Length: 526
Image (cartoon, rainbow, N blue to C red):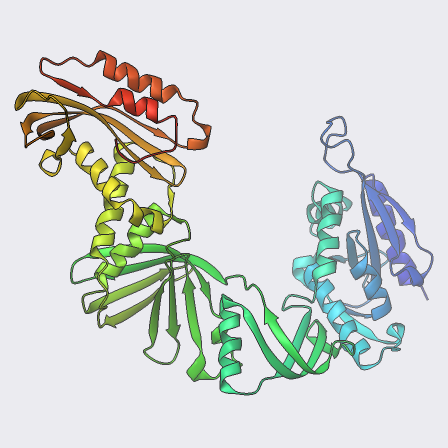
């Protein structure tokens, strides 16, 4: 009786040699492979980028048959050796039929899918019996026509192996090692179970899973290690009582929340993080929530009721980007009116759409919005395109100076008058000129404008005079992005502005004294 196993190895080894593939036999089933082959890759070894690349090395297990059965039983011990080697591995089935020449050859790559099946089977058996003998257990390896070598030539076999491994043997090995270390952990490696008492504690835990953080007392704590869906307890990680603390939860998705007000057509958009921890199956339906969070806005949506809560997160002492602050105050203004709101949360997948009937807010923030919008216009007039972090308390303290800068930049002379004192003054003056400086400090940023106010000066009694302007002209404006780094050159430029200003009437020049005074602490108007 012929030894078809040896015959199969001989034929495959001969085929390899005919196309320049070096093969070595293991000589024992203990290795889990029959042939170890080496073959050249297609990379140019003279290229410095590829000179470190080794030959392509593979392990091959050969199965031979006289029939046409497309499956073989292999011991799990041998399967594990091929599944866990970082080298490319293949099962080869050779059909001889009644002749001495193979009629069909099939090649199956031990890929990620087959590796997972092998390791999953081993995990199942060893979890039940840690001393199980894997060399006594088998698993069926099946072949199909997609694995057939056609045409049946040595060159075809070489091409199949090259295509599977790819041009870089090292890259293949690294990818396989990464897969082996993570296989079976797709749903997480460890789990924790516990009991929680009381509705208040449960709601706190739900809030923690929605990214709000915190801690809550629990009991009957048990932990488990899970791989390929099979769990086992971790004895040293269990307790009758404990405190669960969640410091940070990563958002499940990021997207854009659009809020449309169909009554007016107004629309606002916010970049938000989405947390769905409160929608988990362990949470009672009545408590399941979806949370959308951005730096200044938080929306909590009840999954099984009509509950939607909007929380605006503004702190007068915390820095906030000016554009974001304006957007939030615009939202506050829109929410004052009872109306419908269309919410659309745009994800990478399909958007989530909700309709909200809003009943209106009592608080009126319209004056605050006007101040912020005025500051936004000032920023634009000064062509400051970088983000401007603002502290709201500083803005409210500087409202009068924001107004002054707005009037000066907008030539709004109707809101500008100047009262001053002169001893031995000339009385009423027509066509008087006043040179002044308006400055506004927001954080470490200084907005500065030199202007000429033209108008009539009226004597109002004793030494008091009043300039009633008919025109305001901007002579100079600049931004100092960091007051602490000011080198003093701006004040020399202001002096030149005053020096070169020409007028036919009486000139009241306060730019020069301002430039001298500005060597001290910042002021907002002079």
